[in-house]
Image: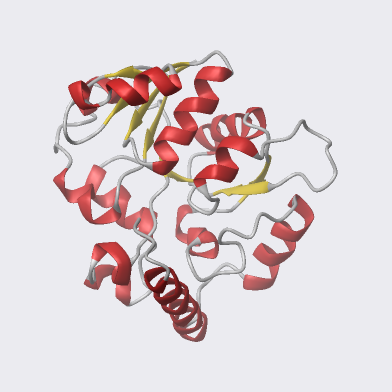
Length: 240
């Protein structure tokens, strides 16, 4: 499969390593230009390109950049890209450590990926946002392995979701249907599914217990959980 990755940070790099090892043709871009990706290309086997070229590379596109930088992407980034090419969004909102306050996301009415979708002007899927990059690169297991990590895939296009779920399985993880994009809050930071590396049965149980409509109480609780997590990471000197 031809796959374009826009973003060469932790998740983008981990995906590039794994996808090229599986035989996929991967083009990867960052905001500074392909000439700055020589070392990453040598490490991953991916081809450095511009963001526009990555968006036109093929059958699936991954956007994996800091949330605050989404509005800086070119407005015509996906111009001419066929409508049936799935776009995966891996972003998370980190107001304390990285993104600052984004008022549209503070109320809880809009999920992170709905916000991304609005800015891209293109339907997106939410996946790969709730696993550490090192685990994404190294913890995949063959199908049927006891305790295999499961990843939720949320989105509104059934065909695109199936394509993304097949890729998740190929990478070595159980794919769980995470519902619609509006329900993707269930895998955002602060929730029980965020970076907990649970097997499929536990992921499905948490999705069911959380319900489909986020209540004000849930929004407040998960925001508090995330703030505590971000403060802990900040104290440890972690930068995203």
